[in-house]
Image 1 (cartoon, rainbow, N blue to C red):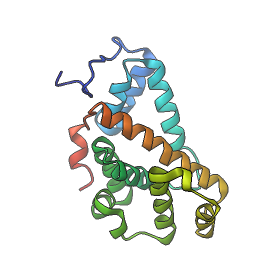
Image 2 (tube, rainbow, N blue to C red):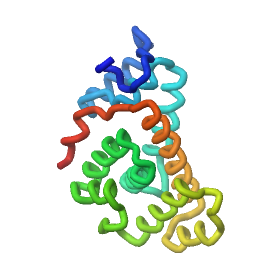
Image 3 (cartoon, helix red, strand yellow):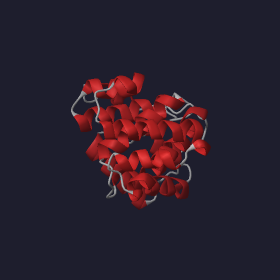
Image 4 (cartoon, rainbow, N blue to C red):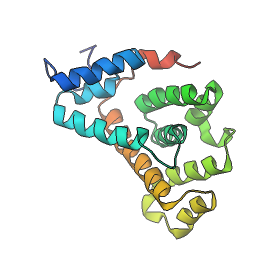
Length: 188
């Protein structure tokens, strides 16, 4: 079971459907690997498609949040949840997008020591509150984001990115999902 991306014995569909194989080929071309989270979902192509569709919309589509800011949220949520897979994968992406290896490590270890903007700090505080106590979020919490320039659509995106990674963290942690070894050395 050493090549399994998780502790569960759920082998990938073999052969992969043509569209899935093309997607995995694009990953190989762009990333030099197929992320284990995709391999883990590939036992059920409908689940894989749902996961990748929502992920790509949240993390890559147009938004008032930059790609780096969305990745920063992913890392802070994952740090709060202590998700090894997501901290490794998204910490590498923060290092790559920011060009700052220290920022990636700061967000993984203790985001409060990071040299970030007031806007980013407000966003990360909010994402942490979504993670720890979403039922306690009130209008002043949303207003604090507006005061830092986020419109309501950006707040919606922030909430959804934080919520998505809370779900993903729980799946990754509960299945002992292993990060691809390549992530560890990226953008250092």
